[in-house]
Image (cartoon, rainbow, N blue to C red):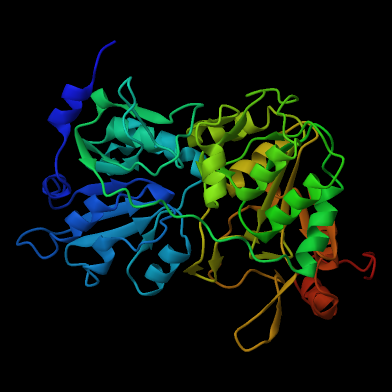
Length: 455
């Protein structure tokens, strides 16, 4: 068997030497989520203020702590500009200080953007990600973030792998690794442990009620997409304690709840039409226990996002149940899931991908779930159901695409409904305290008819 050790040694360089390859006006892309490089980032940040070195755009997706060194070292942004394609809490705080920008996109399009020549002008000049150590066949595994990194590598001018021994081996699937022949340089990193996510807080009574309503539509053989947070974990707990069986997983994120479902024997993937007997995902965030569960697990399949999040593939599995959170909705059924007015809170991500995929699935359902109210910092109660979206709010899910809405006050199917039916149904999901006001606003907007049933 061929040994790749000699080629590995030839490509081995220091983080400082790798960072010296970056020049002015370059796009430098980092690995996604927990795979953001550590040593390379620190070395690149140390070049801040070098004479003539300007306008280096550093891009990441869903960045997690630590804060990128290129941001910490250069708050005046004289050398570096930081961009995220999905805002985490860390990215959001940086954006609030003017230290980060955002690139909107439906997640599944990432593979096309970085492989289609019409977008070549924004392809990475330098790409650096953390990965597992090279195996005997010359492959580095991306571990917890497959995403669209392989597409970025294909179009990158320079490819750098920062090896981290703590990254779980996530088996494919598709696009989960890169061969040393496609890598220009290798950094042997400091093996900084990848970040684990703290446990979700205990669910609120409203979240428990929402989970109970969603559970009514999950049947034997259903295929699940769950996200992070208390609600998905609550649903996971309910499924684990139920009589449901032969469930499948087709998701973008593999989370803690899915480990429990596997270990309880609820997940067999036996009824899936595609990727049968495999739980498909494109990235993972969770606890250390979740990372240990994923490591080398042959029942899971890490796939590139152009596959995992493709609505045309998602819908091929029957009874696809997709559950996602939103921030607010208006009486026209316009959904905002990513901003508070013009202030970016999260990102488009894969929400639209799975809303479309689940809705088009035979027997499938897309649930947009949310607590009907929230408290501001002064303790004042506000409705998430509004006559019109907050000025400047981003429409994440267009009204014609919305399938099911769920709050603690009920659920409603909006597909095929008139604007009058929609207004009535949405008001019925609002907190009772706000319903009369919403009816008056609906009437003023011309979407409330006298023939509508009073709530």
